[in-house]
Length: 618
Image (cartoon, rainbow, N blue to C red; front, top):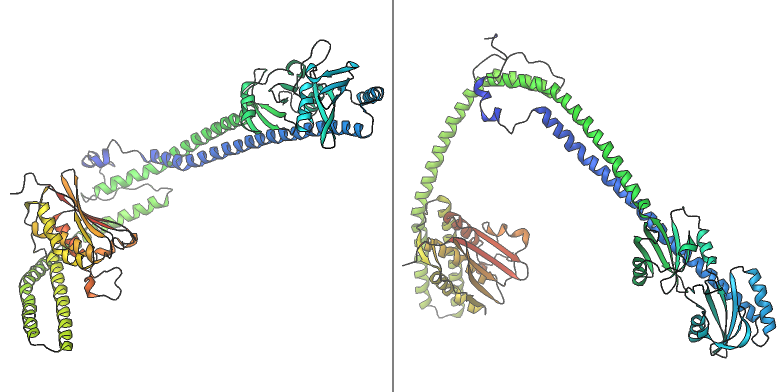
């Protein structure tokens, strides 16, 4: 016996369990296990990397918006400084309207201190320019005849400082931006003093931000024209801003926008609107924002791919070390049925496999003892089953006899109770007589319910299936509960149902009767509705009520014996808590699915599904 070949017997190798095409070696499962454990971690690391990169991008975009707001504040401060300088010169008397010589002298001094100032001008309250250092002193001219007339009219109309749009160069005059300051007198604008500034001033301010060479800052006027730009202000100042930028500026006073710049580069730009109506933007190349994400994804893919390969190789190596002793254990287990001695099992570095070998040796030693014990237990179980069947048959015979014998005394008591009523004249005796009748009815109801439950449990009731019209059954059961419903002021309704079903008329009637009685008993206002819904090959009979409803956690509890919701005092007039238990047992006996839905405070719906008959009821 010991010199048998060390291999799996052919009878086991040919079985589907051992040779199934879906079976995989242990090395394959180890690789799958390692990947299953590793891939979520790698995926998580990738997600965290992407989230971190996106957070960096969001921080960069926030920086663009913050820089745009800072530029807007700087432009407002610069324009505000121009306004204050002009107002200070007027207050000091340096720019009088009635002394052109002094005006020109002060204007020359201001221009010397501000190299980007091109000309100063003065207009009266009607918008007529009386002094313009660019053309000298002459007869008053209408503001419309000058390039910065719009700013003059706006300052007169609003009574506030106004900044013009970009004024393109014309002839010897360079490109300008006019700043007009109203001169109030007695609540009215008596005149306007202003200065025409070359926009290079603000291009230089944008360039001083010290941004990378491929980043850019822009200032856009109210008309969507680039007033200033850094870098390359000389090439792009005065050009219309791209459509995507003008659309964004019309949508919101500040935010982010992306598109192609005038240079042809894709950029993302943060923008903000200044108090003087200009919009300041600060943009970064799109590739600058996207490069960190692409680089992080590439690095993560390379690193994660290398980890996956290394983990798979390690799993294959470990799986091979495990597979050899496992195969030996398989051969040994297959030989147990033929009573072969265990072949030598090579030791494994896995403690559980060594334990399995020891357990296999123990199993071989005790297998025969176990077989003997199993036979003994099977014989004992067969004996107990026979005893249980005999007890069940005796119980059935007892119930069949007790059903009549236990009900007979109640019938006699009802007869005596009726006869006793004829001879009672005292009102107190009649009250005691009524209470006795109530107690008898409760006892008889309890006995009948208990006998019903016991009969269903014993299995003595066998359904007698027949084709029946549902309409007649519903009408009969509604008539039974009509008096109780009328006493409570409830409306009983039923929808037309002309279907023919296959069931036991008596048992199905008991189910429907119990459901209707239960609905009337627990409904105080509203009514009860019986409806039918056709399903594939079946009919669902539904009983709806407008009662208190059933909490979700007690939808199963209500089908247990002696369970009543809302009746802690166990008032016999509200039932005994056996009706729904009888309903469930009867439905199971008939094979009719039963379900319930309820909304506390609104009502409940009980439904039993009955198969449709293949023909019509007679």
